[in-house]
Length: 451
Ligand SMILES: [Mn+2]
Image (tube, rainbow, N blue to C red; front, side):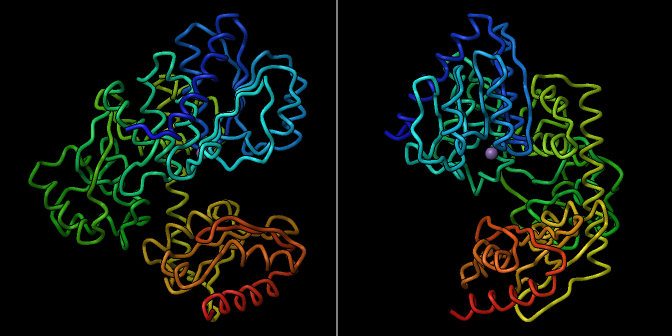
């Protein structure tokens, strides 16, 4: 059933749809600006698909983050319609100054301003809908083209929702509405199965080692351990999971469930899609790799249906990234972390590892790579600064830890800045304050835990 607030959001999205249709019919090139993560790429992909199907034209730019300079640059461009996906709400005040029509399709918390007449602002938060859980940037973008008879694009909206971690034991709110439409119009199938990565396209020991979410302690990020694990069951590790006999699949399933019960659950697939993209979560992971490697055009091409060579290039990027993460885990397994009373940290100057510390920290906690009783702090040097990525467990948050305020407060004390969420946050501090920062953070977390 559609609730009242969802109705209001859908109505706002329909206004955006009318504006988009108007510009397509006037043969205007639509200027799409979106975010470089998997949600942003699917969002841009959804809008681009809709325009393409209507024989319209578009020009896409993908940005790691929308900055004031970008806004003032875009404002000078002579397009009649700008569409911001998965970003823009924070800059509504500046976007109001655009001379052309603008559609904002975002799910991040907006600023206080009211949209002017020529700006259609679509954002779940405006209607009391939680944008971090109930609908993603690609979902919000989907709502804006749904009225053009484009419900077959619902799958792509869920790719973004998965990538933004909005699937938590199920989809809720607007996402569940989109899910119903994906089943009805997008050929989406749901069945209970093993949730291991790329199981239709990779050798099984890789599938297991590449499964970062849900984490498999002892196997995730470890190719050798994964091979040994399969050998013990006398399963051949060189074939794809989908090539195993039914009975063999069952043996493997039982063993993996013993390691983490969450490994078995609902899997969302589009059977007629290429094996690499069949599972919506794998699709998101491939888009994510395109984004991380700055191959934005490639990501958008995939969304637009290009396969074969494009898919080859993208899966290579995906595996390159996975192997980099595996190197990172190897490094941690060898080096360990440095433990203070209340926190533990890892420090790297390695060119590749330092870009992955946040991810390594997050996954590492889920596979018991660290001491789960202390937040993990990743530190990497960039010139005269240190970039900090902190992750902790739900249990520690419940016990009083708030990484967002802890990292922010501590960073500010040393002339840096920081913020984020209670469970995952980041900061930037001057390099020379490294030890002072760690000592103070250790104290702050200790106080959090004793209050
Ligand atoms: Mn997003």
